[in-house]
Length: 329
Image 1 (spheres, helix red, strand yellow):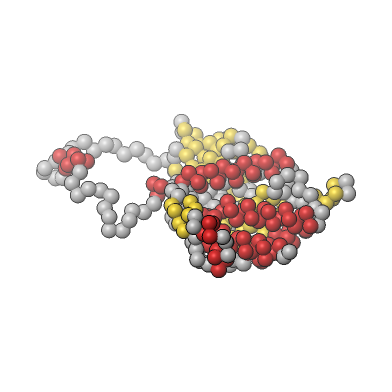
Image 2 (cartoon, one colour):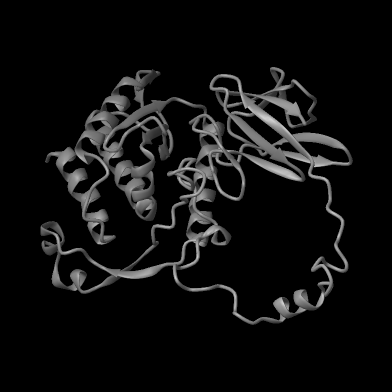
């Protein structure tokens, strides 16, 4: 049995069933690279070959978007492939491996990069829980819609009963706001409902509404200025500067999330060592604070591991391999 061809067929069937006629990259090449990493990172414990527990696949933003609706199924198929490879070579997994896809802005479509890691069981369980939480949130943010099977040669090979079914497949609601891979970032992060654009040609506001009438009555007849203009609250801002790239990120009170998961104004970092929800910066009672959100690799401020600490101008925040300088406005 050619495991590479079997994995390729199964992965492409998953896309076909989601009515996707093109593939983001060669699944056969992905299988070969995953197998190479499995062999490369296998180590010995008491004469037993032990497999690495974490497999990360960096893909292009476009591929990340395409994989989002079938993310869970593709991860499952790649996990089954890795287990089959390990069994063939008498390699043992200490626990279920964790497979995750993450977007990389520098990768072009059809390109990908695979690397495997040996990490301790506690850290691996934290990554596993993070992935499970991400998949749960992704499922909640997507509205399922029924789609029929694609009429590909592979799908026609399935029995008639299976071809007559319709499966619930999450629509492609990948973020298109901050960048092409918003929503998968993280690993694959989704557009919040509040950020989805209205359908063209359809007004979301009635031509005549009670709120418009109320606003009209609240204007002075003389100069058109509001009779009771509410005073504007001052905007409290700070700045984060990436020490390597020089890219800046505005930080606006009362809070800002840092991680791989974009959306909702969060800072999304293309760093595989950053958790989807890594840390949060808050402003309260005239003081900026940063708190680690139980991230996998922790958060450092001025090279010191922190749980929660106040921030001051010039402090260096380290999340994953990214160093961000905090600057007060």
